[in-house]
Image (tube, rainbow, N blue to C red; front, side, top):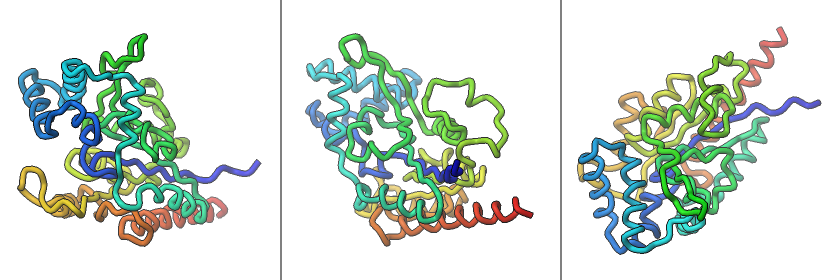
Length: 287
């Protein structure tokens, strides 16, 4: 039986990395008839008032506001909201192209989402079919299919555990036995040196730092069409420059996924490097 190809795993943040802005801002918040800024400000106030995790706060506020406005919050509704999300240039063609590039180098490329956004929204997008794992925040649904409680809240610090789930081949969020089990590095599904993380900012720092520490590659991206950050303190590009200077990421690029653009070229060169390392390891094993 032919040996399976070594796996390269690419993990992506979603909001600001694959799609501009926050996924809730495309259809859900406009449906509430309130401004995006008003929603997030209220979510932040609620979090401060209750010493509450920010992700749990926005999820609760989604349910509260929807109930006030008489808006349905069934799973199918959230999936439908995902259909309205649009992406940075080149995203929709990127995955098949990178998969083929990996194949040409003798590697299998797998893609995963690790996001504080909602997995139901991601599942409704045109690119959902390309992901081996969608690790994102999500709801529990009652017998009528109505969202009633947070099932999972992924914030910037606990993103790192999902990198270990990818590393160990765990394709769910609930199995805590295998993730804590000691597995020799050479027996793990995806060695960390074969893992690439792509994120857009400070909320991705723990994940990027951990990937780098474990021998993988961290890439920070910025929206080239946004001249200043929301608080006006610096541009998105300057934030990426800071992350590189602080050794929190290996590479930076505009969030432009088209063929031939810097981001695609960086990913391809990292795949080349992984392929070369695999070849050298194979030669070493023969000696």
